[in-house]
Each structure stands twice: as structure tokens, then as C-alpha cells.
Length: 376
Image (cartoon, rainbow, N blue to C red; front, top):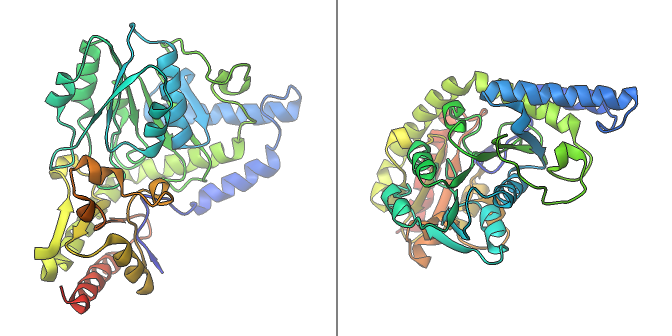
């Protein structure tokens, strides 16, 4: 089976796995315990916090470890809303946001939410964002890179608008962390989230950065871990492994980007025999993560195509794994204004460290053969 679903999750890097095992066996103490064994775990935890902060160019005082991107999004938004810059109960978010963003916004009492669609290129219309701001707007939540089609939102412009209107800005960096350089953007947002298992770290670990100038209140009162940001014993071995994975992927970021650009072009070329049936949802190259390809093939249901590819030895996806469990179309299809029939045609292909050019071409050729045998 050849894997093409790296946007959903990645295999654990062998070096990160070694770090995980070593930390689990040698630094197993509770980092909040006052004895020496707990102190060793606490030292390792704080070393990881400092290493990640240096990697991202942020103040380590604003970095909190979580169980992953979903919890990070939830707690970041709750933290920002606990200490708003101004009175108000209006929030603007993207219609294509991850389900964890929709989840936290749906549970808020007394807030009105404006959801922004994507344009035909898969990008937020910045002018539309500005038109929807009211004196009551206290938060904007827009992801950096869309997990289904890989479009890169104009964070700089969005952040400028938020600053001008005294609005907090949270961004989900789960798909961009480790894939593109986010250091210059981090200084522009109020908070951002990231996840370990998208960068060859362990599952069940991630993080949130919140501007240290914001005096947030804990969502879970009485917690002592992570300065009260979340409850539960801190998973130091997973944090150490995620830190190792983050350092490794950041060192290969430019090389990976160029490689995935080549793979993307090769895949597109391999689909030429059926190009009249293929619809790629993408932006211009400067606003497109090359490792994620979201597409539709006319009159072919995405789930059927996914199963056919699986039968032929290729693992692809029909969208975000968090959404698939609910048997719902990828949220990006609604944000793009696709019809229900078109939404069911959506599939996602994503590249990673183990992807080879010949496998990319072979996948494209297999899809062509599947379509030809289907006799469109």
C-alpha cells in the first residue's frame, strides 16, 4: 500500500520514536512532582518549550502544550474570549475551518458568528472580511492552510485588518507548521495552534501559542498543569518526540517544498488523458501548499474513487479525517459553493517524506485507468 494521506496524519519519525522511548523510560516522572525524578521531567519539558520557542521565534512564556490541534483550537479561542480587547459578542470565522473550530463556536452562548466562504481560488476575500466587521466583533478565526485543498490564506492582510479594528486573531497552523516558514506570521496573530502528528511526531500532542500580553483565564478552573491552561499530567515524552520531529522537519522545509512542487506538476501531467473531467481546487502557486491536492472528477463519487484506489494499492482521502467519521462532505466543498453532487466527488491526495515521484505518476496513471474503465 502506497500512502498518499499525509495531510491526515504521518508516520512517527524513527529518531523521534527513539526520543519518545528514552524520555518514557528515563524521564518518566510527573513534571509537577517536587522530587528529583519529577524535576528531571520538568527540566526536559522546559527545555522542549525553549527549543520550540527558539525554532518559531516566539516568547516561550506564551507556549502551552496540548493533546493536539483540536484541543488547541478550543482552548485558544476560549482563552481569547476570556479576556476580550473590547466589549462585543460577534465572531468571524471561515466556513472551511476545521471541525474543532466549528465545535467551539457552536457551543458559545450569546455570540453571533459570521462564516466567510472561499472564492473560486480557495481563498478568503479580504474585502468581504472587512465588510463583515462590526463594532461588536471581538475575534477572527481563520486557518493558515486549508487541510483539504492546501490553499494559504493571506495572514498578513487579515492580521492588519484585525489590528486596525482592535480584534483578536486566532489561526490554525496545523497544516502549515513544519511545511512553510511561519516565523514572520507568528508575530501578527493573537494565538495559533499546531499538532505533532502532522510533522512525524506522536499522536496526542500539540501546542498553542497565545500572546503573553493577553491575561486569559483558564477554561478549566483549578488546574495546575501548563500554568492552568489545561488539566492532566503533561505528556513529556510525546512533547520531547514532537520537538525532535519539529527540529528535523524545519531543517528540511525548503527541500521538501521544492520536491513537492515537482511531484504536484508530475501528478497533474499524469492526469492529462482525463483532464476534461478533472477539477483541481487550488490557488496561484504563491498561495498554495504543493503537498495537498484537492480535486473532483466529474460524475465519480469520491468515496468510490478512494475505495478503487485502495483496491489498487493507494491510500488517498475524501477530506479531513475528523469529518469523515460523521459521513459529512469536507467543509471546504461548502465554502467553495459546490453543489451536494459536486461535493460528493471530492478527493484529496497529499504527499510526505516517503513519497516518490514514480509513485505519484503511478497513482495518476491508476486514476486514469479507473476512469477509462468506468467509461465516463
